[in-house]
Length: 226
Image (cartoon, rainbow, N blue to C red; front, side, top):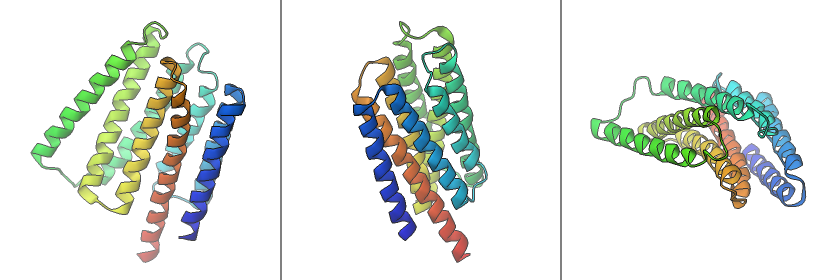
């Protein structure tokens, strides 16, 4: 419990530093602070140790993507960023599929999930295609493919929660949705000139790390009890 309290305090400090950097520093240097912050979280999880072997590759890819994000205006960086994030969330989908291997939802709920996934993909497609004046074909294609994987990972996370309803499931679902909404806010901020979303993007990102930390803590508690 003390470890969780310490983690909460660290997250609060990181959020304050990042929000302050957006206000007072050049955006590029603010992005460097974001990268350093996510790298420190990666080191924290390496030190803490995680039960899920695929979780560290997922986090490593997030940090690598943050590095490329520093130069998102350079040629092909958006495509590379999207592919890295796509692989990261595919890893998350593999983790969730393994957890759901022997669990099934009812047909009605499954149909509802399919409908929700389809609606979200269409919404994403509409939003992305409206940026054709600032994005070229390969950028649009890579972002759309990444968005499909994001929606799939959210659907699997939600299914995991509905079938388990444990603290672990809440935290896993929480960090999955928070990381997805982080990139959604970043997309809106960058391509629709909505500066407010730079702040929400930063907050959601580190809340995602906080939820991920909770998930790891609950996993460790299960290991101790067993």
